[in-house]
Image (cartoon, rainbow, N blue to C red; front, side, top):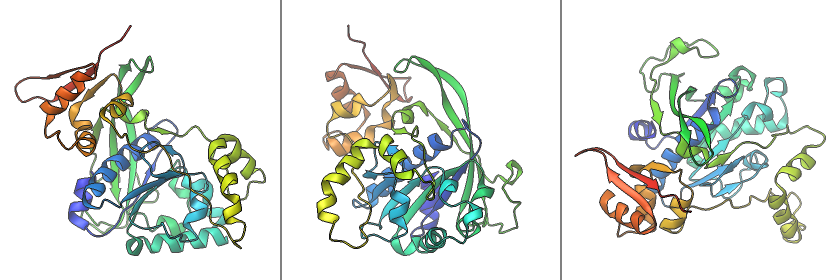
Length: 321
């Protein structure tokens, strides 16, 4: 888990990859892990940010041209978490000697100096260029299980995940042995579980197609799927026209909720209060514990109760007619 990594290796920075077939939970797991890591780092560094190449509602910036920007080392590239979905689309092994691939490999070697954490996803780790794959600290293969009914989407969804972690370089396990490539389930050093995964589904969207650098219709595909972001770029074009090589304009995504009501609006119908306590405390410093958060939620029409004497606090949205 994020706490395990940061506590032992600070101030080193992580490069993780979630891999597996379609539907195994790569994007779900990487986004959930990113949320935990972001909350932890933000508490220690208020300037810590999140950038993504897919739509993430707690990201500070998200844009389909994020990878284009990374290899130019822009000014904002420091103290941040980078989320890249389907990294092999950008840098497959067959194009390992392209200028973009070599520049990206250079970027990966500098993440400690830039104070950058990275989380990638891909279906097949063997497709990634070798110079990038050797920089990966941990390979994580997720599996979703335990379906529950989610009233908000009126469907059955997976609510738990097991993450098989392979410590490729032996940095945490203490065994710097030569692992098989790609990592196999037998190489797992830890298999932490995530529960209530349904709380992360509404916080990201990976429905957009990710075209490769060399695709002849790349700009048209991205503009069709990110119309509002490209409209903002056109509005900013006059400011960039004088630059010889303008950097991609990264458009701000939806920011974190600013009120308790906004925080509750993006939650599923039933939640554990511990999943939102830190966010609630940032919004309203008067909230010190679960019972005070429960009082604030009841005022907004939620039902809150504690399960048992020392059990977790549960919040449920009351249906309105």
